[in-house]
Amino acid sequence: MPDRRIRRQQAASTAHTGMWRTLREICNRNFTVVTLINLLVMTAYYLAFVTSTSYARQTFGASLSAAGLTAGIMVIGCLLGRFVSGNLLSVFGCKAVLFSGLLLYLTSMAGFFLVDSLGLLFAQRFWAGVGVIGTATGTIVACVIPQRHHGFGVSLFSMSTVLALALGPFLGVTLGARMGYASLMRLNVGMALLCALIFFGLAALPSMRRRHRALFSLNSYIDPRVVRFSLVALAVCPSYGCVQAFMTSFAAERALSGAASVFFLLYAAGALATRPLTGRLFDTRGENIIFYPMLLLTALSLMLLGRAENGRTLLLAGLALGIGFGNFQSVGQAVSLSLVSRSRFAQATTTFFIFFDMGIGLGPYLFGFLAPSMGYGGMYQALALTVLAALGLYHVLHGRFAG
Image 1 (cartoon, one colour):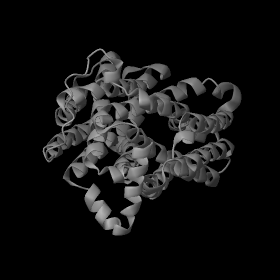
Image 2: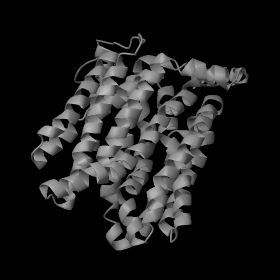
Image 3: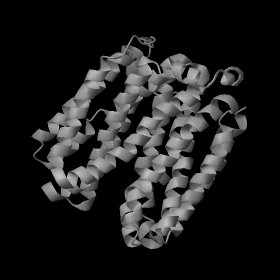
């Protein structure tokens, strides 16, 4: 991959210019605008995600499985949005697709106040537009960051998602108990309006329009060169999906609910503290120096989680998971972008996140069958072995070719 080696040499040769100069090159106006939009949208997404199940059960008397679908259908809608937006970005351009996604998001959030049945709640969550927005912001970031700083820049951008992961559930749990669910949705509408206003701060963007792409060609939506690497995400991400889905039940079973409330804060702290470092390492040393330790640390965190009998072990597992899996999204996206030309950034971003979201969405369903017979601890141990197998898969599919 000679072009990637050249970019890596350029990044290493500019490392001595200093962190502040690098930050000035990365944190331009467009980067700042889309990062703020991503922070607000993902905060609202996680806020709705963690509170949907209880709302559906209390308001509509839904069964546990049906109530859980109100959260799961958001992931399904996100997957569909990511799939279609790859080609739309090439046809209509980044700004048009991002604005359309924001309008869909605003309409969906405001539409909650017209929901009077479980079916309408499913529809309202399905058409939230988060997948379209996420693909558009990720592609814009890839275009406005200098290529020699892609790893570091994508890591900085993705820190907004980590902050949202901590902020969204915190707001949902704390404010929901005091203000009620309708007030939470008003907050989401307010954040949607703020995103629409921030959008107009975008300056001109590099053109990505390629009108010759065939509407019914799979190649117009995903990039085959990224699929092989993205299979690693499909194998790794079920572990985090199961941590998200079953943490509350697992902690209650082991009388660790107090520590569990801090688990994702430590996860966010571990990810935030290390993402700038891993981004710089990717730019100067490549992905292998990050991926092998990262996947080993993810497996270790799951082993610790499965064996946690006290709060200290549980919190240590959260910190290790943040340092390990917490860097997977940002470095994985940077690797995907490095495999394609600039005109295919939208398809590369779409491909990676389809497999990423699919793994998170399928994990709780597939591994949930193990919990009744093996217990949550056994399930997390099985996930640790799955991540170790994914490490071997990474080596076979990508790592041995990465120079």
